[in-house]
Length: 425
Image (cartoon, rainbow, N blue to C red; front, side, top):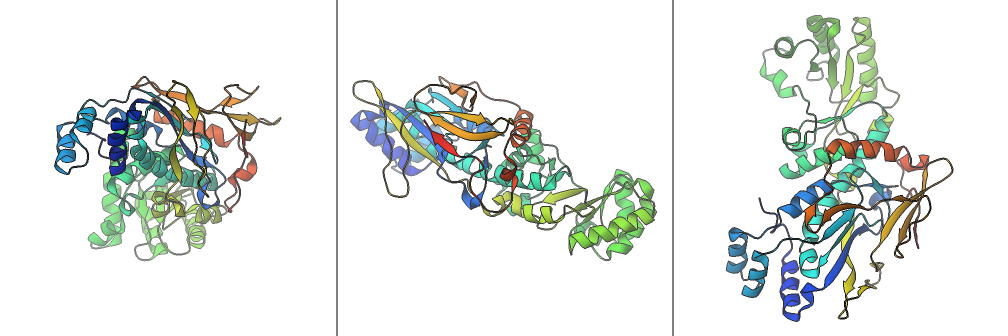
């Protein structure tokens, strides 16, 4: 499906006017960055890059798109003729998925003619703002959970397409699986799920529901035990499945107290290896509060798919350089109060301290690489062809490795400043 209409009207009106003036064909450099980390976060997580690459490949104006634009008088015939032949033929580089970013980090740089690059603004931002926000929240939850696995289960709390993207972003940031089957189909994210309260309520008794589930999926299944009385449900579950019962899930009440009571009951019944999973409006703070409880895994829904209170990454897409009449590429920047930007085509590096942890985000415009600096910008699109696509597992592994190199205070859940400073050279 074409992504060409996933854009704002004014992108096309700018294009029409620039085609008329001749400036549309000037070389231009756009940069995606965040002026600040929203919500007092210590770091952001790059996610959505692979989806951006897919969107750029499908950014084509076919007959259906052109007919819509013509019938609604969005642009003139000369602009429609340009759009009919539109293909992005420029270059894109960026931070790799799973990496972290800080204020002013140029996480994606788009270079081409103004006409080519300006049309990508909205689709690039809509993908990155959503996916980076979800991945940033998911990373905090993963850190709070420690080695305990998390399942993403927020599909019913967001737009159907956003749910798939959220599951992908959460997997990059360390979630073990998702309940969303489309995310499994489209991106290979592991899927998991057993039964809801409706399944228990459907049957004439809780015992009958448990018997049916165990008969279908074996004793290693996960039984939901809080439809009626938790203690009675646990007794019935172990009676029917035996000590091989895989897990029980608790979805309501005081989760810490309930988990402790259930653990004691399971052990008393000989089900020492039966795991306890908890759900029910969890976020990173609730997960952290359960650190001492005998919990083996978490299911997170609403908070995850809404960015845990920070539903956007506050990323912007700004022109930072443009070609002059003499063919030279010169820096340009906004000077408006409260929304300034820094002009110039940039490179980005991360510097390490003597312990091997990152301590500075260095942004340069001079083209010189600092000694020992880790380069952060990587080639994604060359002359219109995608060259930077990678498996989702690579992004997941990169995130785990990157988190391990951040200073310890980066993992604090309280509001604060960016974990490392951004410097310009």
